[in-house]
Image 1: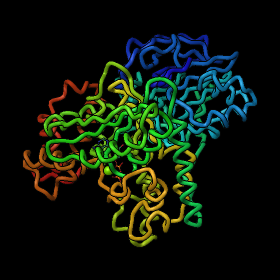
Image 2 (image 1 turned 180 degrees about the vertical axis):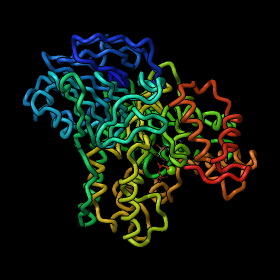
Image 3 (image 1 turned 120 degrees about the horizontal axis):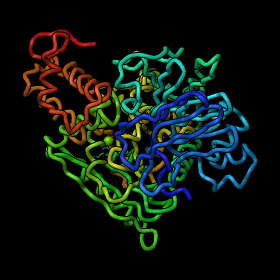
Image 4 (image 1 turned 60 degrees about the vertical axis):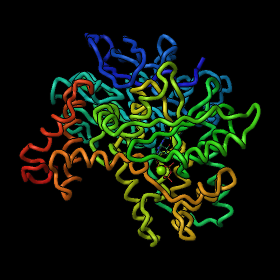
Length: 534
Ligand code: ATP
Ligand code: MG
């Protein structure tokens, strides 16, 4: 029976043509916590060997479905099961589990099945001699791939790929960029799959695009736009709830997370909310205002499950930098700053039971919420288009960030259906009457305190004081103000090289030493007058 978390949350597997000698790799290193199962599995004409990670309490071969020549491994979950059950015409599949549903879609549509799916997943499928490694429309569960002379290795974390530690060998994969520091490891693009066929014993790859952000825009009457956004957000939230323990929402009291929390509280009883702050800054008052409002709005059996505040000292927050990079495998210093407070928060949640966490992360991208000066609609649309062209590979929504603490997160604003609707709204609905994210604010105004609906945007890195703490660390190392941005990049890349490419564990990292080393490299932007790194 499917539990309240996905059956599998990660994997690292090597596929070799069945019949060839395959060795079981000795270990695999995942940041994702949870029992790791060693697997040797016949999948179509391939042999899969490697490891699966699954939340505690899952089945023996979690996330795997096999029927004759077709085998599917799914790390993550699907959100449009009803549609998929209709597509394959078998109502029995409604309760069979997501891997079985995906398998039925693959039997019917081949690799094109991935075009139908709205989900948060990375998958590996074998159908006879064809292998497909695919991720969802937004690369929500990152997926990495390395192609050897006669084998293909695929993993949800780059550091877990057997080739990672062995240095650069393996084939180039057409259409895919190799990862920093490797010649052989490639990331599967968002809305993409790599199809592999063994031709005369050698794997031949081609890229299959399954989703691309829409470029067109729609003008809708206000009322219609508000109804559409409300209904699509409500669907996105509901499709992310599961029977079992009540979910948790990470709540800042900003409009994005408050809207998600309010719709979750309406959809199921027992919602817990949690808010983080540091000694420098917090949004506790704003978050509590929302939590209290929801508690009053849902009395009796529909009651919410309580609100918690977690304060983290700045020094402890910065100590999470290696964990954040280890988990997200991200090299972008701005994104790492957004993710750091969340990684720190997830690691301070109760570890005794895995949680299903909903977040408001990601709403600003389709709604242009980060661009406060975008009074000109063209500038706002430029910002949205730029963000959609550059999000891929940043791993902003990687589940490993919470997975490192044993929890599963999901991001309703990047639900495929809602994201498409938000992206295609003309910019005048996003900024209206001098307010950013107008259409979202108005769409949920009846569910929240008026103060919350009006509250200006405050980024997670600002509300938690993260930006200031990282800046302070670099000032302490003597970095002048005009070089702080470049220095942050150098530190993040240094940590990535040690942790992801180099295989170190975050607990082995001395942040002070690594910062010094990053700043004093000849190409680094540190105190010795180096030039900006690449
Ligand atoms: P707004 O964008 O209007 O400020 P928001 O605060 O909900 O709304 P972001 O600032 O973009 O959204 O933050 C991204 C997400 O990270 C939030 O939706 C929320 O889920 C989570 N988050 C941000 N700050 C905190 C915090 N201090 N405590 C708990 N969760 C937070
Ligand atoms: Mg905010």
